[in-house]
Image (cartoon, rainbow, N blue to C red):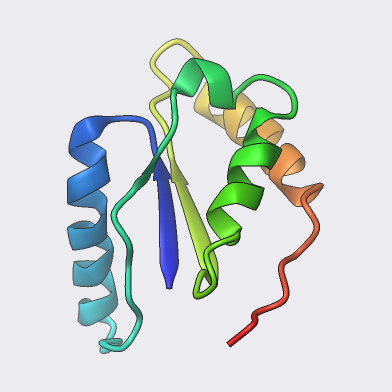
Length: 98
């Protein structure tokens, strides 16, 4: 299952539809996508919070992939992305249980 991490209410409902359409365009029809795991942007960019959020999202038994979708209205997307990627990379990889 793909677990999207999003910040807004609208994204929570719309991102699974978007991801399924992308997968469908690639001929992939058997990967479930859960509704977005909602986080507050101001919180998730603080040190340690993204790691906690990723661990929580991956704790779902069937979670196999994450997609993080955040606005970068007041940040340089390249800088914010690199910072968040480094933080996420420090989270131990989950071992699929199913």
